[in-house]
Image (cartoon, rainbow, N blue to C red; front, side, top):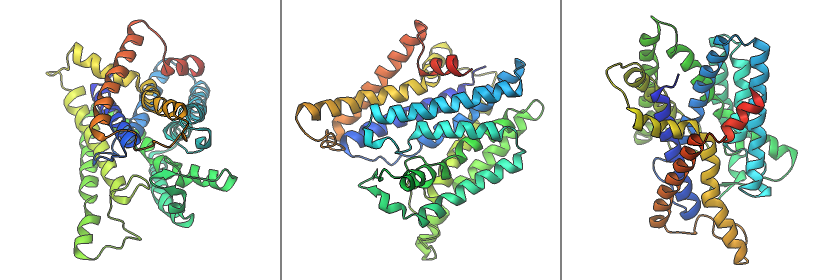
Length: 359
């Protein structure tokens, strides 16, 4: 069963991702809305895993079969992340710990989380959020970042610290998002009569976190805030307290309200055409993630090579923002067109390969 709310939210995350990447990588422009797409994508990965798990259990799959399929999926995404880093970025970026490696490890973590009581998973979420800032402080996080980019030395210590806390999407605190998505789906998709009432709890928690995200900024105005223990700035790298609270709030609120008013509202429907539009983006989100990078990163590398320049010579300054944004819109159209063509002709994308190899 497909849920329109999930398709819409995943499309929202993809659109933001493409606009942000084209703008930042080609022109160096960072939008105010940058930073919402990745948390939503990670949160929805936890929800999708819960739904996938339910479908496997309904088919009578054994616990061992589910574990093996989950482990294979996690390893598939993890190693796909390394291939992506080498072929799309540069060999020296192999261990920058991007989204794919993170989602792969998170999938392995979800295989453990599904067997644990909810309080234990909640504790794990809290530990992930707590350990992130502590590890960054102890490892001198700022020394690994140069002009908005992660820069590490290829040694065991730097690679391990990048994986844990200092990379683009380290385990701490990012693993909290898929774990939270998994628990939220477990609650919101509970069997009747509990299902509908439980969306209110998720919405209330999300709204509370949204309000709390403005507390650090308010304390700054009163002079009571300490940047060391309660940073008020919105920063994704590293994920500040304001960032984590606000993105968690948005994820919980939009999903719970969307589930109530879209998925469970029998008087309202997206219609086949609109549903197809969002569904295509959602079903092919992993393929689109890879494709949109090829569309704007490879031309950059090829052009600099033809001009005899360093590969990163035009990084973040290749085009003005007035050109990068229209290109992003064209890129989105191309991605949707390719994804739709693959569905019509039943061509497997990365998602299909993963199902064939792992399930």
